[in-house]
Length: 116
Length: 114
Image (cartoon, rainbow over all chains, first blue to last red; front, side):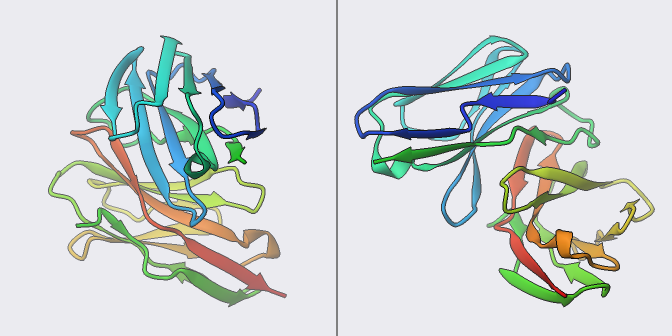
């Protein structure tokens, strides 16, 4: 069973469209994330949710709206897509918030978004 | 200041030799974790190894070991007996326990030559 799964894996869409990427984790983790990896492979955190509550929002344009219906799901909706949104978007999850150093972050397989 | 610095954008190593990938970090949090991830060309991020800031011994996982030098704030990854399948991007990461944020370095692209 895939621990962190995200769909779709590939998405090609036109500028101005609205699209969503879905993410689910079956690890029982409390915290979920969205990361963006640009063409230079740099990984940048976008959002983090803990038990359905937003805890990190890293100055992402408000065209990006995460939604967490429950702690196992964190979806990403993007409005009015722009060329610069083309990237790989990774969903990830980790154990509880706070002072336990051993809790690594597990990634989904990534969603390759291409805006044309 | 950058939280995680990987100064080697690319590295080459001969198959069966050992290679060290450098990573330095910056934090004032006394409790943190250090991680290495592998990203092959297929794109997935694979967790390799973890070192806690209070761990006395260097972490090892099979052919991977983490050379943790706390005073120097370095957490280098050592891959012994390199294999062709080790060719990938490698990311160093840190989690500060007080902030629950993971910081990633810019990555090192490792090429293993036959």
